[in-house]
Image 1 (cartoon, each protein chain N blue to C red):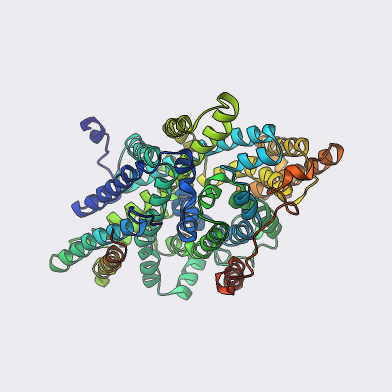
Image 2 (image 1 turned 45 degrees about the vertical axis):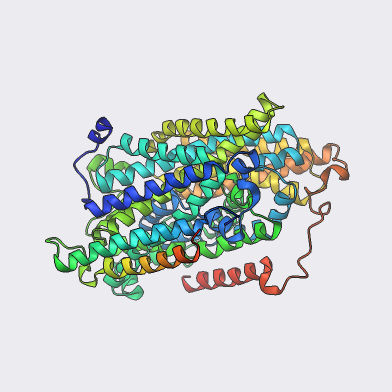
Amino acid sequence: MNRLLSLAVPTHLVHLAPVDAVIVVFYFALVLVIGFYLKRRANTSEDYFLAGREMTAWIAGLSFLSANLGALELMGWAGAAYQYGILAAHWYWIGAIPAMLFLGLVMMPFYYISKTHSVPGYLKLRYGESSRVLSAISFAFMTVLMSGINMYSMALVMKVVLGWDINFSILISSITVAVYVGLGGLRSAIFNEVLQFVLIWAGALLIPILGLIEAGGWSNLRLQIERNASTEYTHLWGTLGSFNSNPMGIHWTGIVFGLGAIISFGYWTTDFLVVQRVLSAKDLRAAKMAPVIGAAFKMFVPFIVILPGLIGIAVLPMKLVGEGVAVASGGHSYNEVLPLLLARYCGPGLLGLGVTALMAGFMSGMAGNVSAFSTVWTYDIYKALFHKNANDQQLVRMGRWSTIGGVAISIGTAYLVIHFLSIMDYVQALFSFFIAPLFGTVLLGMLWKRATAAGGFWGLLAGTVSSIAMWAWVKVDPSALRYVALSPYARDMAENMYRALWSWILCVIVTVVVSLLTAPKPASELKGLVYGETEIPSEGELPFYHRPVFWAGAVAVVFILLNILFW
Amino acid sequence: MHSEGSISIWFFIGISLLGNGLLILGAGLYQLVHPPAEPVVLFSLHANVWWGAVLAVAGAAYCYHFRP
C-alpha cells in the first residue's frame, strides 16, 4: 500500500482538505459494504445476472439511466459542450428521448416476454446461433473498450484534480468495481448505480447553479458565450442548415437521421449494457415504465453536463484545447472543463462531494460495462460455445471470474484511449461499428415475421463490416470524407453519424433481400418474439395515469418544448 | 427495491446523503468562523452551509422512512 500511495504525484489542480478525503473514503466504503451485503443474495444465475427479476420501475429506470451516466456524460459531454456549444445537447434530447420511449413502448414487450438473459440471447431465439455469436463477440469487444474509456476518464479526473498517478487511479477504481460487481452481480451493480445517480446530482448540481449566478443569469451567459466563442454556440437547430455554419460541421440530416434515428435507437434499444437493467424489472409494466422514467430524468441531465460546458466558455480565464494540444503544450483540455469548474466553485466538503460524484459516474459506467460483459460472456459465449451443459452454480462461478477478467482486459484498453483526440469521437466510432447494424437486425426481428436466420446473420455481418470499412477508408484517404459524410467539411462526429446511417441501411437491405431468398421460420417458432405472433397483455384495466403510454406522451411533450425553447 | 428481510436501496442512499451532508455542513460552518485565505469564487454565498444542510435533511428523512 505504501508503494501505491507513493505513486501519487504532488502537482495538482486542487488540494483536498481532510473532510474531502473523508467523503471520498466514505463513498468507497459504502460501495464495498453494499457489495458484501448483497453477496448472500447472488446465489443463482437469475440472481446474479438478472438481479432476481424483482426491480421496481423506479429502480430499473434510474439504473438504466445511471449505467449510461458514466465518463461520457460527465466529463466527455461537458467537454463537448465547451468545444461544440449547445449542439452537444442533441445527444441528450433527440439523441436519446425518442429511442428510450420507443424501447419502453414497442421493444420491451418482446425482450421481456421472450425471457431472454441478454440481447444476443434474443438473437439466438429469433435468428439462431450464428447471429447470437456474432453479436456477442462484437458486444464483448465493444464493452471492454468502453470500460477502458471509463477508466481513462477516471484517471484523468484524478490526475487533474488530485494529481494522482494514472496507474494508481486505474488500480483503485478497477479493484473496487471488480469486488462489488463480482460479489453481488447485477443487483449490486444496480444498487450502486442508483446510489451513484443520487450522488452525481448532489455533487454536480451546484456547478450550474453557481455558474449561472456568476454569469448573471442565462441571458448574460449567452452574451458572454457569443463574445468569447460565437453566436453559433447557443443555437440547437438554427445553425444546422449547412455543414460549415456550426462548430460541429454537421447538417441537420445527420443529427435527425444519423443520431436521432439510428445511433440513439441502436444504443438505447439494443446495447445490452442499458437493456440489461430493464430486463431486471419485476413485471412487464415495470419494464415498460423504466425507460420512460429514465427518459424523464435524461432530459434534465444537460443541466449538470452541457450547461457547465457552456459556463466554462463564459467564465474560465484560460482557453481549453484538444487532448493532443493539451498534452503537448501543458494546457488544459476540453475534457477538463468540469473539474476546473469544480475547483472554481467548490470549497472543502463540496469539493469532496464533487470529486465523489465524478468517481461515482465513472464507476457506474465501468460497473455497467463489466456486469453486461460478464452476462454476455457467460451465457452467449461460454455456455453457447464451450460448456453447453453448464449448471447454475457453474454459471455463477463463471460470472464472477468473467467480471474479474473483464476488468483486467479493460485496464489494458484504458491506455488505448489516450491515442485518440477526443473521447467522445472515439465512442461514437465504436457505436457506429456495432450498434447501428445491430439495431437494424433486432428491429426487423421484432417487427417483421418474414426475417430469416440467414437474413439476420448476413445483414448484421454486412452492416458491421461496412462500418469498419468506411472508417478505415477515411483514415487511409481523408478525402473520402466527402462520400461517407456527404461533405469535405464534416468533422469526426458528423462522419460517425453518417457512417452509422449507411451501415444501418446496408444491414436492413441485406437482411430483407437474403430473407426473401430463404425459407421463413414457421409461425410456431416465433411466438413471444415477433409482432403479430406475441400476445402482449392489455393495460385496459389500468387508470390512464398508471399506463406507460400516458407518461411517455408527457415526456414527449416536454422534449418538444425544450427543442423549441433552445432552437 | 425492498424485499422481506433485506435493506432497501433507499436506506443506503439516506445514509450517504446524511453522512455527506453533515460533513459538508460542518466544513461550511468551520469556514464561516475561519474564512480561508484563498476563497473559491462566490464564497460569500456559503454554498457548503446550505447545500450540506439540504443533503443532511433529505438523508435523515430517507433513513427514517426506509429504516430496516
